[in-house]
Length: 155
Image 1 (cartoon, rainbow, N blue to C red):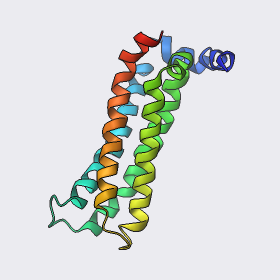
Image 2: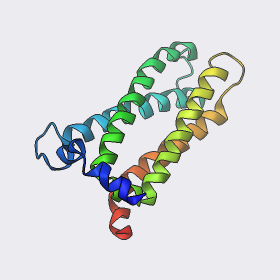
Image 3: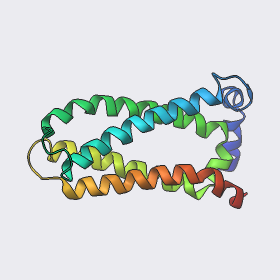
Image 4: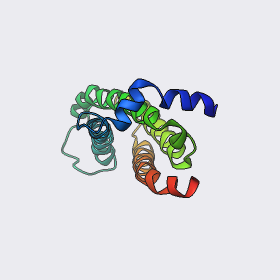
């Protein structure tokens, strides 16, 4: 598998992102990744806190309008995440924090999808889903931030 990762990270796009030295290379991709993830996790957290009893005067139904924006944030995060991964594939693939981050993001997005189908359709109250969602976003963001530090121990 590692030889495949080396081929990916030696591709023209990966090399350009990693080594171009221009603001619209790695810094822009990283900024867009942060923007997408903060949009997704931030809006999701707002819904979570509403379900947990904060801001009870805000109608829950009105928050359903942010789902398209969250899905756009997910698309931006996934696209830029792939670009960041290929720019240093062998390092990221060997970093346990990277895999922990991916698992937490997958769980958080799955929880969000379940929340939309069950809570926003009136089938479930959603307090447990909201707490799980917040925990998953906390785990994803923490693992993502730790990636740079854990990489030093792994290499």
